[in-house]
Length: 323
Image (cartoon, rainbow, N blue to C red; front, top):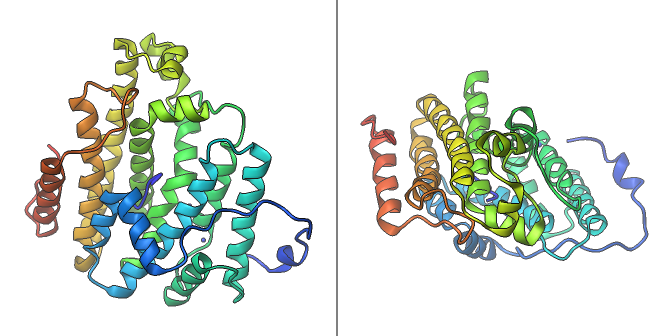
């Protein structure tokens, strides 16, 4: 994901009528059936796949996976190496047009048909977080991606591309009428997951896409060099920069935990599982001494099992957070 789950949704059809008729590159469409969605989720985001299996209600589980399929399609377009910015922007525009058409009753593909069905089943699902996600992805389509500071720069980006995922999930988890505080903490969860993904993928993003999400302000404060990130050179100053982001991620996960008791009992386990499983990546990063430059992070099987045990204990009121 980028992440995901993880784990920012409707306007008129007039824009569709005015869409240009000239040919443009098509956005990839890898998900053509619920089975393929499940396979892709298991392959690309195994921790989220595991968490989604804890959703008891079949319709809610199907809805969550339809949201995942849509987000994954957009994410693959935004992160596709070797595609120029104009082509990526055209594909993201196509994804938005497809979504609007689907919500007007004219889906153009299986992904949007599934998501439109989810909107119909959950009328309080909103369009705005989906559009915000696309806007965040559009902001990445430039020769290099840099963020001057965490607040407001990186935080705003994370809210756009992932913070809204929490808002997408609340209606599906029986919390459509959640309090403003709960919604804020749901956004915090999305930001935490996105920050975790950033920390996990520092090396690949820098080398393959010329994207450095670590705030430049933090790099300078720690005495780290941008070139060290770009060439994958692990230094004590770089590790110190990572530690700042780890502390932020843990604060955000802690904020998200405070909202879970406000959710319906049937939904608490899956949300605790998302929090614990994704924070296990942060744990693994610390065990590696802050190194995600040379290889991608993946928590061990014992770490995953431990995360699930903590989630179960918390969902039954037994505490067991990451302390």
